[in-house]
Image (cartoon, rainbow, N blue to C red; front, side, top):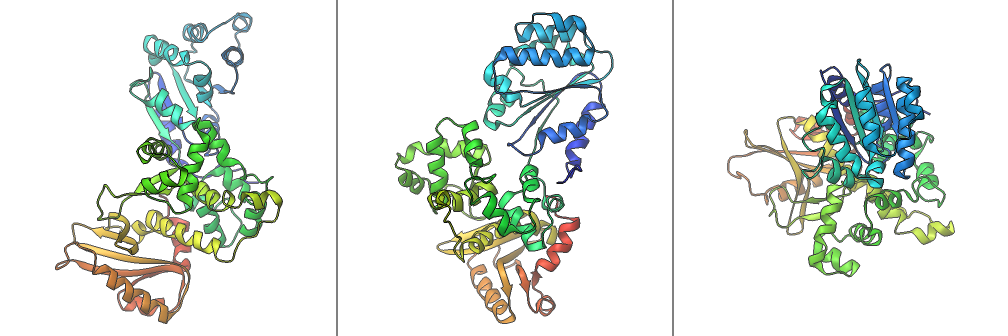
Length: 460
């Protein structure tokens, strides 16, 4: 089990910068379950004076008593321990009047639970922030996992705290260069694990208990007692009341329905009613709307963005009955097809900008049944690069066929056709004869190259 703190240097630097400023600081830290918010707070507050309170999904009265005890313990205030405090106004009023003179922190983890049980805490915080705490030595950190609730109740214009925060930090997954420090697997299996889990630290910790990916997914996904078997239920049930509708939409997309009308028809609702559900799923990072790089903005498609959700809805959800009975077996081509799709996304989002840094606009292209896995533009230099991604070993003969077909498809792309400079490339597991192809002017990279890159550069 990994005990050292990995990554998050940018986030730590932001928090330290806030700590070192004068007057009160109000920091909002939010992100999905398991993303490492508590661990980040623990690392940041190490060696500092203050109060850490982990809220629970319980009544306001119990929450107030517990936070009262934490404050009394920190301030060594025996009077506070004896007071019969009944609401947030009394508690924060007392803290305001008895604020320590030196810099200290008040970190409330899972702040979402406090809002959920009693929304008045927001207006109470606003009141005491405006009247006293903003000019005190307090550094308040409010952390929450319910992304919808945090966005609506804490960050939105309608929130009592709007305009008060000095910093908000959306904590996202770790980059591959940090994620691979968790895993004791060969490079390919490390990359496969990352493409299933993303950079979620708690998930990577679970994967670190295994030395091969096959055993990991069989025990933790394809077993009804596995760690991930019910994980999406927990996450979605925290965010939405209409659990069945959102699950049906995600299942529909996993079955290949990417247009709103097709998604709506699959789940049996009016197509005009599907858009609010899709927007909610996008807002929370579960799905994304994608448009071809030169495509009509009105003709987007919807894909599952979250890696764990993508894997879960493509495998666990589809084969739930077999998993429950303990008879599920993967078909030979299922996992390679999934990894092929996720590898294209990995290359597009994490790799290309390191290989050709002057090419700032990167995306996929599709038109009338033709597709190019990754395309990149250097708009100032009128340069355009076309890449095919192959989750396989590519021999010399196949390379020639791939590049010839790539050139055929590139001719269909309408962008400065008479004056542009074109580059072509292949990125795959292993490219035989890659040095010869490079001599011919092609951009060719395989795992050998990515292994070197991942150790130093793949940060985004």
